[in-house]
Structure formats: C-alpha cells, structure tokens
Length: 403
Image (tube, rainbow, N blue to C red; front, side, top):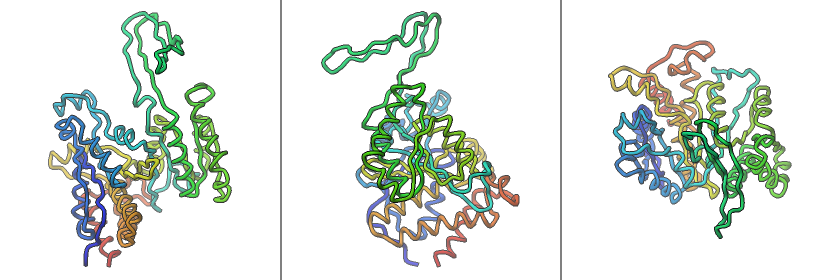
C-alpha cells in the first residue's frame, strides 16, 4: 500500500514519561505504516527544557504560529519535588501556559464517547465541550507570603506616571498570603470570538458562566464582552443555526449541567475550565478519553490529550512491569492534527485516514478490548489488557479499515 503523502509538516511537540513512550509507539505502529509523516520536531521533555532554559517551548509555539497546526505530547509542569528529581536549575513554567500565551489561544476539550461506556450522569446523552480561557487569572498571578502585620494595597499607575487607583486589599493583623491576578480586554475578546465561532461550527448551544455577582469588575467584564459580541455580531448567525447563547452564574451552570442532555459548549474562565474539563471527562469515563485543542484567534490549532504524563505507570514501565495505559486521547491528538492539516492542504486521503484511525480506536473498545481505566466502567464489564495488546488490537482493526 502506497503511503499517504503530506505537503506541509505538522509541528510535533514531544513530551515526558509514559506519554512519551506511548507517543513513540503511536508513530511507529499506527502512523508510519500508512502516512509519509512530515513533522517539524521539538523535544519538550523536561531535560530539553532545562538544557535550553525553556527556549525550546517558545520556539515550538512560534513554529505552530508559522505552520498553522501542531500536535503535543503531555509534559511535566515541575513542582518542588520534580525540581529535585530532575535536578532542575529552575521551576520551569507550564509549557501549555507558554503555548497559550504566545498563541493567545482558547482550549476546547471534548469527551470521546463509546457505546458501551455510559456517563456517570445519567441525563448526559451527548458530549459536553468545555471551552477554557487559557490566559491570565491565577495562572499568571503575582503571589506573596505575607510574613507579618501590614497593609496590602492594589495600586494602578498609568503610562504618564499618575497614580489613578489605590485601594486597601486587607490590613493584615497576622501573617497570611496575598495574590494579584489580571486579565485584559484583548484576550477576553479573542476568547469570546473563538467560543462563538466554535459553537457555530459544532451547531451547539453556548453557555458562558462566571461569578459577576461577587466579582463586580473582573468577572463582569467577561460577561459584558460576551454580551456585546453576541448582540453586535453573532445573534443572527446563532438564530440561523438554531442555537442559543446564554450567560449563567457559575454555580447555576454547574447545577444546570447535571440535568441537561449534553450537546453544549460551555465556556469558562481559566481556573473553572481547568477543573470542569476534568470533571466532565471523568464523568464520561476517563481523562484518557478527552480531546483538547488550542485554537488561536487567527486559526492556528494545537492538539493534545487532556491528561498528564501518567507518572505512576511510567514508574511501572521503568521497573519492567506491564502497564495498561490508555493511548486513545493521545491518538486523537494526532488524528485531529492530521485531519486539520489535510483540510488546510486539500488532502482528502489524509483526512480519511484520521477518520479511520479514530474509528479503529472506538471499535476496539466497543468490541470489549480496553485498558484498565475503562474496563470497570464497561457495560457489560470487560477484562483489562495491557498497553501493547491494546495497541495491537487497534492496529488490526485499522488494517482492515485501510484495506
């Protein structure tokens, strides 16, 4: 069988631990036999980030901006324990945070649904996509450990050096902690545009939720921008598509979500989206069954799995033990990127291959062959297989589909 040709490279961002092992297996077993894979490779493993002082992450983000499509393996965001374990000179920032900041992107996360695994929330009949505003808030906050009594103030000085705002945050009568977070109109507008466009593409109702009753300036600004864009730009398009936009307080949205049938796009601020995407993925089955795509305002796409590096199973792997790691979300990161590349370059065969590989994954699980995270959730219950067996099962079904 002649390999499917590519015109433009994907930007490939390698990662850490067990997902790095699976990344290599996916390329060797599921991609290389069928596609003449062209990638612009960047190693975002923690050792290379240390070696380059994290410049490799910046270079990778700029490459995605240039080529238009990237695919990323899960990476470690180091904490104090990781600094010691990997002998790091610095507690490097989250690669995802750097990519989001440079691309000014919005993260969309959608669960992968299979017929024999039912959501924990019995009312959910269709996927729920979470849109996360991946900029600012506590992820870019300035923090301070307050050591003693004293006054904390919020001060703003304009470009001309004039102090235009000063207000006491708190008069500390004892030690404590202090945090100052920010956001900016340009990023919120980009987020809102991305959400409205993505909802139109999916033909799904759009919810946006925050807590403007408490955060009367910060959260209210998000609410106002969404409302402004909806009224001025997107309302006629939503009506024509038969979908709706509505704003809800975050607590009301959480309550409503438990009773809705799904098939919605739920837009959240940065922290809310981080937390709620994990909740939705777990309720649909597994964090390893959730796609994640970062979309920039000018149409650059970066695909990845929503989960982390699977540290515990990596240590099993290093001990020579068999693992039962679910590769599906990582496979879907590759298929999403290949499909997008095919759409941009007019390569129908590449798009069809992505569809077939996804179908092979779903067929494998629906045939009762699955990893340890899914086996207890299956109806009827199934016996878990190890990672290699699962990969071989996907490959066998893909072979049939490709013929």
